[in-house]
Amino acid sequence: MGNVPQPHGYHDYRDAAQGLNNGAGMVSIPVILGSNYNERHAEEFTVFTNALEKNRTCTQLWLCNHQIKTRGAMKLAKALKNNNVLQYLSLAGSELGPLGTERISSTLSKLTNLKR
Image (cartoon, rainbow, N blue to C red):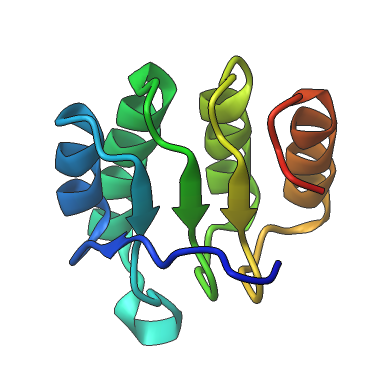
């Protein structure tokens, strides 16, 4: 994607949700995979996607190498469904599951501001 500026890195999903609630324009969350991922992360991901759904300023979202799985991907797709400001989304290396990948792809295909 060339010269895409790097977003502010947040500590975890809850921290990123707070940033979104405060009008963050670019969000990056470090890798949460394998044994580091637990039920607390799933709850925080819900808080994050709820904040993302309400946010109208986030133009870049970086969630590389996350263990989102199908249920999380469904929540993410719902959060992005009516987003008309997001221009860049990176899910490189993230685990979404087949149905999650399908849902995210379908949602992203309808967003007009994304750089392809």
